[in-house]
Length: 119
Image (cartoon, rainbow, N blue to C red; front, side, top):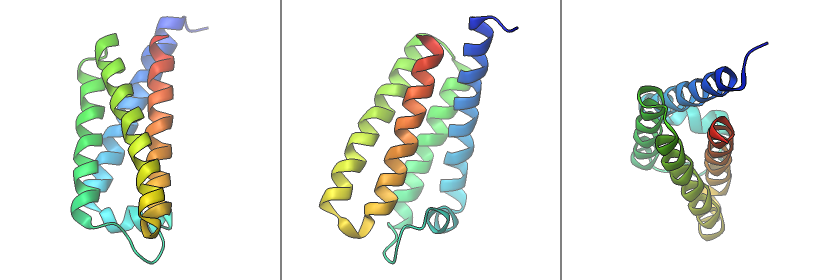
């Protein structure tokens, strides 16, 4: 049976890898990701999707390169803030609601899982 620190390390590596891969997808195939989410008839502009992809990629790489508590806390804070702003965007821009809720849900899951790795 793996020790807690080994499980936490594996979880953090999975979160970092998932974030980096998701960011890469957002950067390279924004329309495909939006279509997979079923974002509705009005998808967000590619530029916005790619900027969010760059953030995801950078954040995932940071977790993989420097998997220490301070990086995890910063990553979780950024994801938490992103989740909150996506909920506000879903309310303010109904045309982008589905995409905003999906993006916020991914960010919230990432924050929870990363935090679980260090708590």
